[in-house]
Length: 427
Image (cartoon, rainbow, N blue to C red; front, side):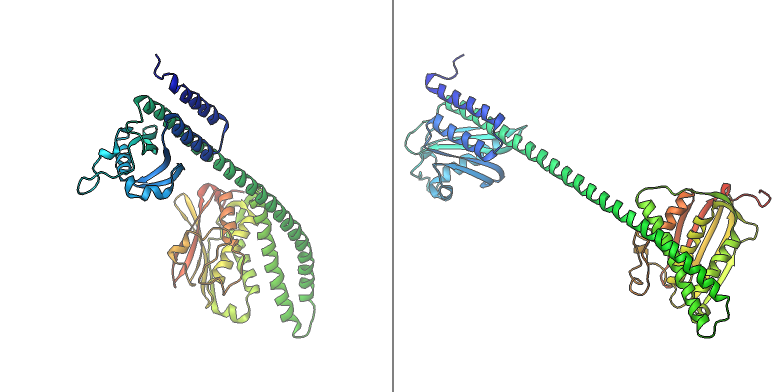
């Protein structure tokens, strides 16, 4: 059973020391250097190196040296060693060279001086070559015995285990770091989101009350006999207040949805045409005389068509789509709201003859803060209207789609199941 004689027993002790160190030492370079130094001392080698991460026949990611310099690997006398190293790489088996001086490495088969015994062992982990452990001696021929080779194989196996442990430890550290960073980032984002949503809700609530007072005051003043230019100024104030009310409503919806709060739907039977006409009247009050003259507004909605919907949400959907149609029709044109029953579905459409949308922009159209690049500088807006519109449509259980041709216009189409459109006779 005595594979190693008494003279190699110190090697076993050093091998055990390395094994014990692996369980407690996390510094890979320190462990590999310990393995290299132990291998040199146990075998009586003159010098050695441990090469890890082979990238080519003479290329390694990292090399640790003991009594050997990096420049030695570039010297002519190291030629036979590179031959051995390349063979070990190719065969993935250790090699023991008794007399390197007998190895012809020059064109004239002349031996190179300065190198005698060579011992090289691959570092394998799960049959993958992860490095090489190299030892040599220039003074003694046939220095390394089969027993030394067995020891070197054991040290190489320990080095491979060290490298795998370090790799796994680095992976765990990186995964832990990423997890902690993501968790911290998520908490920061959640905290900021909560703070912003709270601020928006408070600010919007306060603005809503103030705007309601202003709206009431303008309404009263508009019915009083006020000389010019008073009426025009009041009209402009009324338009601005109405727009501010709509913005506040959008911001409040955004705050609720950003906190993933499902808005409550107050479903009731709503005749669609009066609601559409009311929204178009509001649109007319916001447009100047010049702007109004450039638009042709049409309503093609049956008078008896009704929907089961939340009136305020449906009003918001129509308002956002109509506003969008006008906003992206800077030269005017036709804005049409139409609805018709198609089999078991009611199609509600808002159409314009504006600038249209390029195909590459369609996929981002319903994203938060999304605005058409071609019109972003020419129009105002938060980029929330269509995102909120889609959310409101989906909240009802409906769907929305868009068709557009650049330079010709856009059609937004809401598809409503017939079950949401009660019969005219129903209460």
